[in-house]
Length: 352
Image (cartoon, rainbow, N blue to C red; front, side):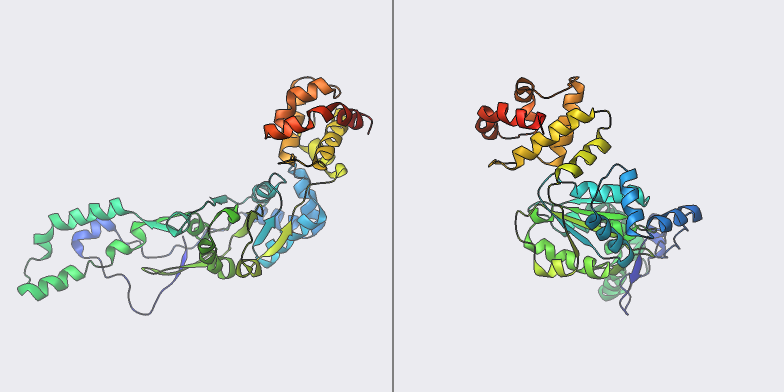
């Protein structure tokens, strides 16, 4: 449930007896249940230092830098949103997923796209249910107006139903509102916010700064006892507004160096032989220094490692690289451009 801040005048008229059986009385706010004490103790121990967080990430097969662990540590204790920027495929979305697993919190994800608005992000009215109850009112209209003297009194009785159809009973919560309604907190992932419109960023400002949303027909809906941990990701396809950035901690995740990427592959694909792991990471590092339309990301490196393992590969060779190049390069133009360089790059990676 959620905590409501109501305006002084009543927004919803009392429900007449004829509709009690259909609508019911759900205006009371329930008290959230307590999280298990053992779980709380584990989480507190987990978040007691940056080092403990970093170790927990590694235990969950997410190999991160001190900078990433520090950003999550601050986000947890300060309850500040984190704006994560960087090229695609470096682990921005996975960071939010792993954080939810670590803290044993539900993950609520909002995938951004052009044209996203409050009806898909915050709330929407259940129009079908409103129409159904309108039909109920129509069928019981004689009973409702029974005893009314004249037109004015009949209209006054009908006005008693004016706000019933714009109450929580008829509201469908979307990801942002669902995140505020989580009684014990959650991880809210607003993914690829750079794909949304500038107008949508304005909708986010209130929830990012105050962990609340304002709904004209209802009032202000605030987060419960535990506000969500908010992660926003961006692939830098456009500039994010200064107003949004001011409300967030900033974290940039670049492509990893060779040592870090080897640790990542070892964590994600532990079965791969050490020699092959070094060779494939060296090959990927060489590709990232080339002028390609899309350089391979960590996700492609992991996919390639699994591919080579499936093919029972012991060492890289030019023919094998050509046969599996489509796993790490997503544009034919890039594949054609490096085709003549494959032997030299492979040889360099094998002897690295």
